[in-house]
Amino acid sequence: MTQPQPLLTPATDAGARVAAGAFLVDVRSEGGRATAGAIPGATITDRDDLDAIFGSVAAPAISLDTPVVVVCGSERGSGPVAEALAARGYTNVSHVEGGFPAWRDAGLPAEPGAGAQDPAGEPASSGPHEPVRQRA
Image (cartoon, rainbow, N blue to C red; front, side):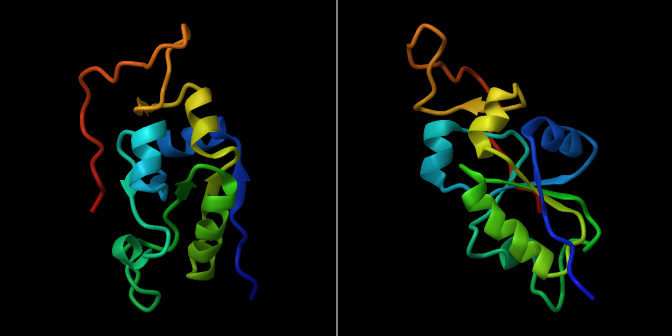
C-alpha cells in the first residue's frame, strides 16, 4: 500500500482547512517567528522532534486521520515535515505553498513580528495580543 502524499496547498485553502478544524503546526524557528510573525493558535514544534507533538510512530498521540496543516518559512521547510507525517501514517496532511509569507499576505490570522512593517515602511506595532499557545 502506498502512503498518501501531502498536498502543497495555497494559503487561502490552508486557512480554510484550519478554520474547518485542521491541526495547524508551525515548524519555524523561534527567531523566524519573532522576526516574521506568529500564527495565533498554531502548535509550535521543532521539525526535528515531531514526537514531541505527534507521539512516537508506534504510539501516535494524535489520530492518524486528523487533518494536519504544516507551515514553515517556505514549502522547502514544511514539505519534509509533511512528508514525514505522511510516512508516519497521517492520511490528511498538507503544507502551505509559499510558507508563512503567503499565509500572512493572504490576510490569514497572523501577529506581526519584529521585522514586520506597515504600508508606510515603518515597523509595525504588535499592539496587545494573546500569546501564541501550544496545543497539547
